[in-house]
Image (cartoon, rainbow, N blue to C red):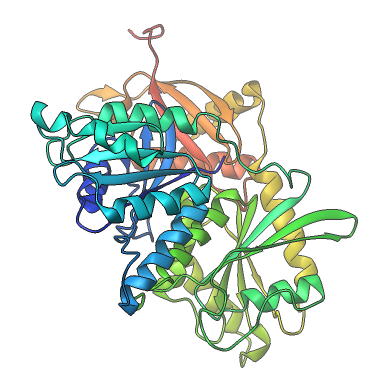
Length: 444
């Protein structure tokens, strides 16, 4: 399930970034150390009471300005509001309500999105008296916090989870396979969309960044329904102006990845795999999505006997954190191997949803342990009791052992590879969660 988006909105200097950093800088936030991924400060995944959401920071809103950059920042905020399921309207408890706060409140009412008014800088009992003034904004709930001192954050997070409790992913296309096309700018995502659809649904240009939004197109192919999501190209952070609307293209692309059933990571064959390609692939891997690496513009590459081997070797080395990914060389311009691409997408998706019976799993586990005994540390040997699959999308397994610290990452990787060798999990990541068995039956 896609994580709901929570946007932080407010005028300048009310403490939005301090609040964002306080939430994401503690154990409340999940900042994954995923290979190939550098997460921008503008957003981060957070969890509270087993409910995950994505927190998005925005620039300060100044509605009464002629400054070009400030006007662009307002557009950014409007985009974040449009994409969010919940808005945190941050205001300054020491300054009190300002004319700008009323203007922002008016904009938020027009959005018809749920809003929590978060009164920041409530550092002591005296400041709490200012809370009641903010009900005049007419936006409902008001919560007082101190970002610098960490006061009131638990109550606020409770309110956030309460508001998000009814959130569900869009179900209007549940009968279609949702395919997200992702990659850096100008790799041919829009061209591939148009080729698949048979008409120009998306604007195609040599100018990187032509697509700024995630565009959905539903169609049928060979009697099956699909929704293809053409996303904005994800640039290097250093090439994105902090005041530019393009920063939010990354957020929307991430949203597209999260709601997709399967992802096509596109690479430009004429440029070869780049650092940014690795980062984009890392986003897909971190979301646990099945994927196909599609090397586009293959028709434009001069080839010899070893060309494809060299490409395969380079991709395998640079994307070593996702060896499961299927690979194909295509041309969006000519339609080369488009049919094969769809076959690989279905294989990857089917494997992502694969369930293995518990008995069969444990037979596999026993074979793996027999072939290669678990390691020992300081005279303590790892004992593996049993394994069970708890979910799909991606396939996730819980492995029960005597002591979790005894599980070395290399042996866990060995077990993962053994599962992959025994069952077909090509095209999808799998997760193995290590847990200590509560009783010590079997221990001597």
